[in-house]
Image (cartoon, rainbow, N blue to C red; front, side, top):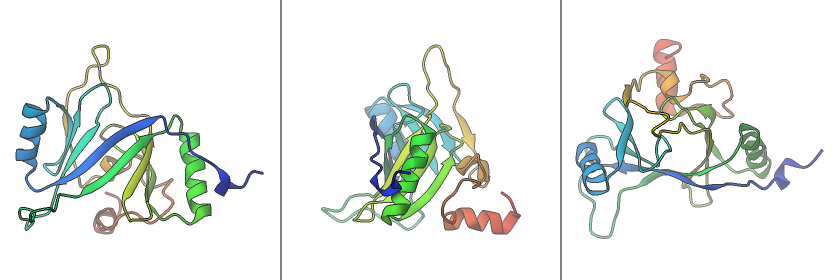
Length: 185
């Protein structure tokens, strides 16, 4: 059997970016009115998924918690994660085995999000940045129309349709809090 640590991923393109924003409505207006992006979905009023092309999202905006003020000169809002597309779930699983074998910290996954229905595996680079590999993003075009909806951020299926069954690490604290509160969100 081949050593999992020797596996080399084959991403096909840069996928999407998730930005943390101070005012989601102001940022949404900028990205729709100035940049021309279209809304695909929301999670509550905390996260909005936007697209320029056929992918369900190539940019998502994540509302920062209350109390974040304007950034001092020279400081910028943070990136939550950026992603690269893989062709298959099988490759995503090989990447997970490689990361584990190399001791690369996995942050969340393997899972399947509600909005966009993409699979995901998020891990940390040497500087602590979240990097994601994903597969199977919902495609939206004239032959596959799509009506935006609002997903409930308190439902586990919004975060992971597989209900953490394929997760390699404990879920993020906010997801664990939902599980602790409701047994199964």
